[in-house]
Every structure is written in structure tokens, then in C-alpha cells.
Length: 385
Image (tube, rainbow, N blue to C red; front, side, top):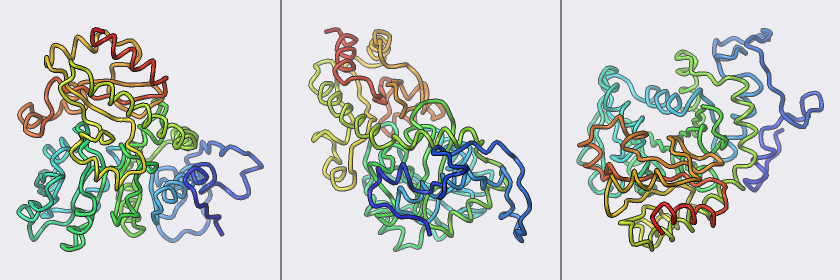
């Protein structure tokens, strides 16, 4: 019988691990084998094969990820987008309809806008902070609602409780992208969400050296998604699985430090005369700050802000920074900074970005593990102090 652990810090280290350890190895080995002996499986999906995401490296991650969010089951995938797209294509089919939060990661939005129609699936965008308006977009064919715990890149904190109540009232499957919050900050299953998806490329791995994804939630739905993924082929390589497994063990200490550091940087930016506004749920000025306090165990390492002098000032500021790398992605040990209009949300039409409040000059920051004081000094210098 698998051991159960109470605290998430202990789960990160011990949940799902082989007992006894493989050949006495304290660290889970890499099983660099595509093929395994037949042991009597009667179902195609139960055959042990690397493409079916059921090698020892996969199974350890599945158990650990499910335990981290106190969910029934989990599945790792080849990328965050593989997790998102396979999940949506598993719970929706031709003629179905999705309600999706209006502010989403650009890749997700682009998939809905550019690819959904080819599958015969419709969708409507709904404001994450106005659940009273959601019913207006509801159709008889609506099957699911899709939200983000903290929206990318404006850090809007969605009304999760309203989303769960709405989904249950209308027999919808609820799906949340929990990448920004991580299981350290938020565990969707505890609040009644059916499925959470992650880009494990980001915080869960935390070292900017792999691409991976995960789906966590109800066992019956994860099994359905697994079968779809087995056909689509989005399996995670064993070496990437090993690196994800290793990176996850420091998740708690990384995310908590990044959250503390992001709070300090957010306070500095909010008080700076060159800054027009800061989006960070830990700030009392954030419109959903009280909701964030209720839902989240920590406010995370992501923030965004705008300068008073617009896009040209943003580019000038970025050119003067020394510590953060100007690059897409997030959640690594190094601080990363970017303008979403040119990276994560470049696939959106400029008009779409403006409509939801993503200006060309918006700057997004993923706070790393550098000393907070050094980051603030660097930002101050780039702002002209």
C-alpha cells in the first residue's frame, strides 16, 4: 500500500517513489527504454510502451503530481500545449461548445481561435471576473468551461468558486490552467475543479531545460485523456521525465522564495513615478486581492506592469536591465522579462490584445531566485535612478 504524506514539502520528495527503491538507488533512474516485456495486458492502453506514457519514469510522476494537488490521477505530456489541446479534444467533440476565460495564455487562445473550427467545436470568451454574464454565452451544446488560476499576463484572479458552481449547475466539465499558481499556491481539486493543466516547462521543472506538460484531476477524465494522448503521440521522453522529477523536489522552496521576492519588486514598482500600474495579486491595490488571499497559499512569482511613457519607454527599460534575461517562458531559477505583445501573445491580433487590456507596452516579469535587493537595484537603474 502506497504511503500517504500530510505536507506538500514531504510529498514533493517522497510521494509516488518506488518502494523499495530501484536496485537501492536513492534517486529514480532514467529508464531509457522504448520497449518492455509483455506481461499479459488485455488492453492496448495497458501495454508497457514509451509512447503510452507508462514507463517507470512516467508512473512515478503520475503518482506524485496527483498527490500534490490531492487529486485522483495525473498524466504527463510532451508539452504544456499537448496537455491543453489533448484535454480539450478529449472532453469536446464535433458540435460541442466551450466557454473560455477571455484572458488566456496566447497559445491557448490561438488554438481556440485558429483550430477549434476545424474540429467542429465552437467557443465563446467570457470575462473571468463577471460570472453573472456567463449564462448569456451558454448553449445547449456547451460541455466545459476553461479558466486560468491567475491569467497570463494580467494576473487576473478568476472567481474559482463561481466557476465550480456554474459548472455543476450546468453539468459542465471545469478545467483550469494552474501553471502560474503551481500546487504550492493552489490545488484545484480541493475546490471542486475537475481538471487542472500545467506547463511543466515552467515552475514544476523550474530550470529552463525541458518542455513538458501535465493533466491532473478526476480519474475517469484523466483516463479518457490518456487514451486520446496515446493516439496523438504526445509522450514525454524518459530523460525529460527524469529532469522534471528532479526539478519538482525543490518546487516548494523555489516558489515560496519567488513569491516573496515578487512581492518586494511589486511594491517597489508600484511606488515608482515612472510606472503607471502593476498587476500582482499580492498588492492590496489589485482588484481581486481579497479573492487571491482566500484562494491562494502564496501569490506567485509572476507580475506585469506598464510604464507611463508607453512602448518606447518599455523597450528602453528592457535594454538597460542587466539581470533578467529578455526571453519568453517563465518559472525558472533565473528572472525572465518580456513584452507579451512580442512573445507569448504575439499570436493574438493586436485588436484582440487591446480589447482585453494587453497593451503593446505591457511588461511581464518572471521573478527568479536572485537576491531581491539585486533585482530591485537593477530595475531602479533601468528606470533611470
